[in-house]
Length: 318
Image 1 (cartoon, rainbow, N blue to C red):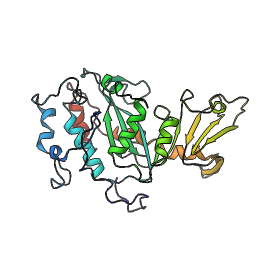
Image 2: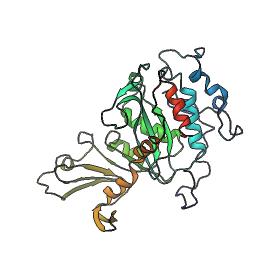
Image 3: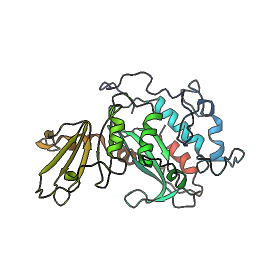
Image 4: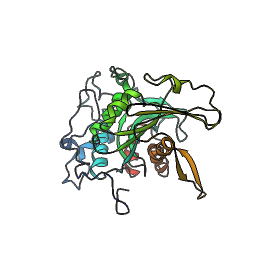
């Protein structure tokens, strides 16, 4: 999955996967401590014996306080850190990356982690993940576990999803590296785009109630099918277009206004908005990762929720 022999990566820094200098942030962001999860000499990211103790046994000697951000994931935190370490160590992403939510299916009791996501087909109940993936092949670069109320208290003035996106990119060492990020409307906002502009290019759908959107794009009037309303403010391009009964809004700092051409599956040349073409190519990495994982037996039943992570490891994520 990490073989770049067929095409050259657009990002050439050899230190893209080096996470040895990361540390645990005060906000509870997932980082890697090589002293805990093993060094590169252990078969280049091999699993240290201590990683499995909280999962296969009942090691309660190191349980943090309840107000600690890592309390709810204490049983699996070493394995999460190990995953994130080896994902970055063994792979350098291509230019298009995407951030989206995923779900580890589980219907049993979990310590305040179980979520309901009706739009997921493989499972509707389980543990929600925030994932950063390579859009071209679905490779999982980094992820965090959604921990409910503790995460909600970390909103800050910019909002929870704003801080989450910046944290995933920062702890993955992908800022200021020439990447393009695809987001859906759950994460995107004009404020996030402006902060990312000097460090990333971004394209996403955006909700109408986001602050900073021009009124003409929020509520376009008298648009007929396939008509477009475009507004630009500095580096931000906002586009609303009529597509059947829907009027989606896209935001981009990457593309220019207007139309481009694309070859469809029937080998026909079709006209599409440039921002739509870029959005379609940069989103879907997390969905592709989920689809490929479904080919394995990681979704098998288990009485203990923490064993789900053991099955995920056996499924070949590392």
